[in-house]
Image (cartoon, rainbow, N blue to C red; front, side):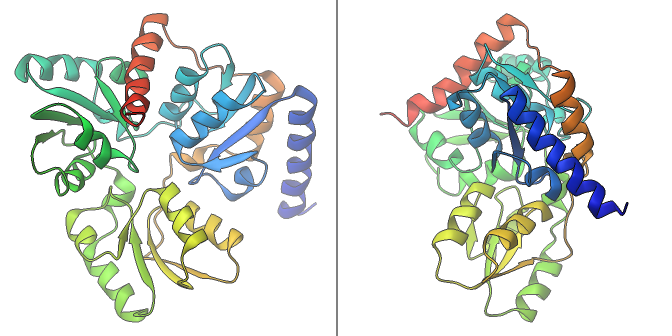
Length: 309
């Protein structure tokens, strides 16, 4: 049996098993294509966590990096949330610790602490409010604060500062290794080769890349733009998994990586066989200490409250 046939057979086993167990599979935009193809929902981390909370199923298989599965648990504390490969972690999320936040609080006593959703649960528990790449600007604008400590992504903090000029934003020096590898020179070459394409980049990219972009969007924002835009050709500055998804969903449009395709190897650690085992064993389960869960939940819910004003 060839590899493609094995994958197709395994897909059918996964689909049958999740139906039998009443489970739902959530897959991030950067997951392997075959994992996305068996998922009930594909999206960004917070979007998927909200799907988990809204779903009737009490058994969630979350295919993403660790902090994403933790966020799903934070929003669905009574559900069984399984993360197929616990070692699939986000290096940027691991660049800041709860101890770091406690040290920063002693240094910046009057600051409001904002954490990007790309943080581990214990870090969220030490912060005041969460944000996403899609709403970071609005969250910072709506906060009643003169000084904001923003963790962990420096580039997202610098991007938000462009629109939030009345507040001092103090960024932690964290970064996404995937978006940091999207360099100005290769993006410029791509623009020269495809002058008719719309350049869309992620706000985790370096400032000089953002400066030349036509649109700056989160992964969810890129999906929305592809759905709504009249443009037929796009240069995309993010991880290659999203580009594959856009090509599948819009075969009549052209999506090109802005430079050599970039891969998040941490996201790609989860294979279809791992998903099958997670369904079969209902493990490894995401477990959080009750205090961490409660305090992290308050941080995430504060973000939602800011948008209900």
